[in-house]
Figure 1 (cartoon, rainbow, N blue to C red):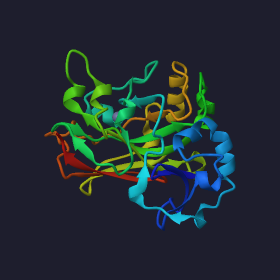
Figure 2: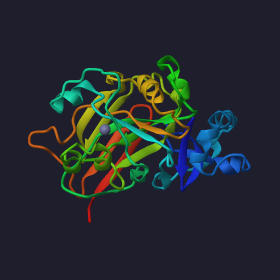
Figure 3: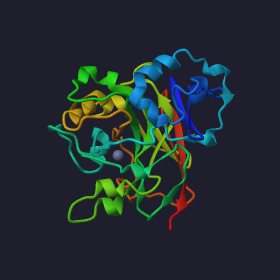
Length: 288
Ligand code: ZN
């Protein structure tokens, strides 16, 4: 199942797996008010919603305007983000990753989250890109073993972990959470894809392009901590709640690591694509 927020209304999609026209059935209307319209309200009742959604045929729905797509996980109680979760990215940052007891973890404050095509106003000339697989939790997870972790995932989406590197690296201690939480720094979308839609949800190709030039390319199978590992270790500390979001880290190719460094400028267009899910796109605007 593919689920979107279309003009703020939860919508089950057809044709969103590439190629043809995307069509959708609005959840609140089709369920006669049993579910929706707020997509965030579906995660606490995810199992019942999934069962109901299986009875819907979205191919007979209305055409979807991509410009109307919003964040499919717009109100998480908690947002987790993982640093240095790909060996090639850690290496380009000059760091060697040894897998310790917990992965480097920070948050993107929820005010930074946005829809898949929302433009990003650059607060400085030090804004960098990080394509990431995003997971949304579908049921409360507390001390979950990795072997069971996928059953706690409502679905996956494409995310960008935009990062302002001057704030991130400021002294006396790095400020990952603030630096990655400017408005628009957490686009998610273009829709949520349930894991059963993917041939192998543990091995998805991620590609990021700037103005058509490929800058990042990796596979989620190369993560230091896989998504099940992350759910296991995070839920061992904080119980995960329905609708919570996990940004799972980025592969090599960020701008900060380049020689010379490369940061985003007004007019740049950032496209982030994950195999089997879709792509999101932001235009960078001059900041205030
Ligand atoms: Zn990141």
